[in-house]
Amino acid sequence: MKGDWKSRGFSTRAIHAGQHPDPTTGAVSMPIYATSTYVHDELGRHKGYEYARVQNPTRAALEANVASLEGGLTGHAFASGMSAIATLMTLLRTGEHAVFSRNVYGGTYRFMTQVLSRYGVESSWVDSTDLANVRAALRPTTRLIYVETPTNPMMEVTDIAGAAELAHRHGAVLAVDNTFLSPYFQRPLELGAEVVVHSTTKFLNGHSDSIGGVLVATRPEHGEWFAFVQKSEGAILSPFDSFLVLRGLKTLGVRMERHEQSGRALADLLARHPKVRRVLYPGLADHPGHAVQKRQASGFGALITFDLGSFEAAKRFLDRVEVMSLAESLGGVETLTSHPASMTHASVPPETRAELGIGDGLVRISVGLEDFADLAADCERALAAV
Ligand SMILES: *Cc1c(COP(=O)(O)O)cnc(C)c1O
Image (cartoon, rainbow, N blue to C red):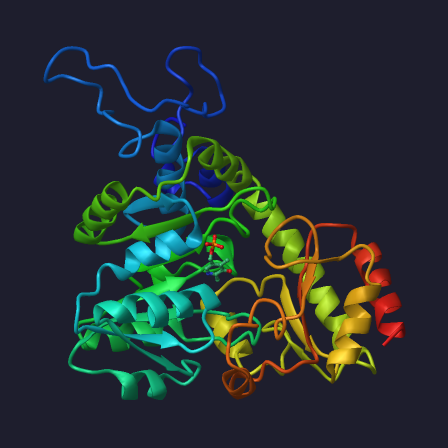
């Protein structure tokens, strides 16, 4: 794209930012640079590419694209969301401390409590829907506040700007896992966060055919460090996966619109249904995080959790759906259902699950892009069996 793409709209940037027609052929689509190394013009002179763990044009295009969509300075693409998160955590040194939203992605919890804890990095887990809990958890050694909003499966919403203010007054960094809403609906950097994390596996790629992760930094020193760790640890996103995510991003805007349209409609259907005890969806006016999310995001997304009261009832529902599939993950074109207590959160100890409210009757839906009439009929049919 010619000219200043910073001034263009979201979907224009999603389609063009970071990409230029191939200089050799004019190919409109970013080629997959399947190469391990690059020929030098002469000793001491090369084209900026030396070895493909360090630089790859397909990956660089994706990194620039996501950085543009989040409004950040630099992007860094990794082999998975977890390797992006693990790289972020290398900002912490032995003896330092981080405060987390208590209901973050299970892999983040596992990495902090079972891996980084071995290196003397300490973490606290608090209900960050009330920032007083975050403030109370701060220590002189706290360097990072890490927020996921909304969370899975409890849809807990955290005030990002408030968390950023707390972090900055304390001399700490705020990082936000923005996987659930994508930059189309929520841009934490504009609200004061320093780093955004994504599992591109979910909405950014959007087609359930790739695992990947991205960090977006606003500070040059963070960007340099993330690139250094990316090179040093080597958990890079492959050229093929970079291509897939770039392709997925081109339709992020239209996909998110439709995800949310169906998400809202399905949440309404569930909220009205006599067999559903409770619906957790930030778009419903009675959701405790509704007002905060309305203020800090431009949409409510496509993840819905609801309570059918018992394991048996949840099992009936999950075994009866036909259009929806029972599978972990989210954010793809297909609607996926899951049973958090026995699937995504099975490794969380039962007493912690109870504390978080993750009961055996909970079902989580990631609403996809199928015709809504089919999704609604599928839901009604499965609920009738409960
Ligand atoms: C899936 C997910 C991750 C981890 O990403 P992977 O690509 O599976 O490694 C991190 N955070 C959130 C919110 C996720 O949904």
